[in-house]
Amino acid sequence: TAIDSSSDGDTVLVSAGTYVENINYNGKNISVIGENRETTIIDGNQNGSVVTFESGEDSTTLLMNFTVTNSGGFGEYDWGGGIFVGGTNTNTRPILDSLIIDDNIGGGGGTGSGGGGLCVIQNGNKPHIKNSIISNTSSESESGGLFTCNDGEIKATNCLIANNNTDGVHTGCATVGAADNTIELINCTITNNPAAIYAYGIVLVSNSII
Image 1 (cartoon, rainbow, N blue to C red):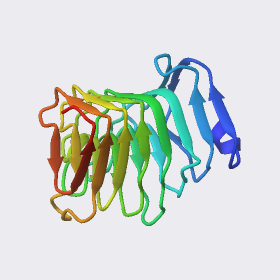
Image 2 (image 1 turned 135 degrees about the horizontal axis):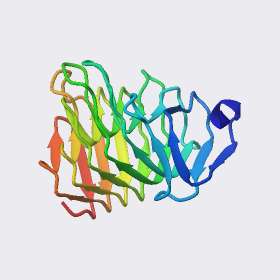
Image 3 (image 1 turned 30 degrees about the vertical axis):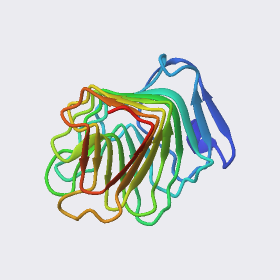
């Protein structure tokens, strides 16, 4: 309700608690800030992606201080993830800061599906996730704690990617080719995943522990 009532440049402050809902910024360049990432929880109730950006939200857009959990319920050809960034040629580039993205299920399987903790698809979409933990993700199809396809990009700084049931980092989709799928890792740690990095695309790594 607060997002729907907001305008570009507004800040939505959220008190600690568990909010069972799925939110979509709907093109609003706003900041949504939780009280504390340990105690301010968005629970997607396995009803698709928990948080969605798909309408050209720019780099003034912020999601901060939340636990994002319990995505799921995707159809066979759905894209998913705890956080989904998509839209064709929308140039969607939100800032994701101080999050715990935990216990999320990605896409439902089949060609053209996938997901994980943070799922980014389509050219020009490039969120920057920082100071965050991505853990305990799983998927029936191409997936990863961080996942890109169809020329999606992710920049990750100071993140821990750990204890996922899928690849820690997965760039690109076998069915559509590598193209320009890119994940950039800066000061990140990737540990205790079935595979640290699985790349059909490009992975740039600096000052990181794998």
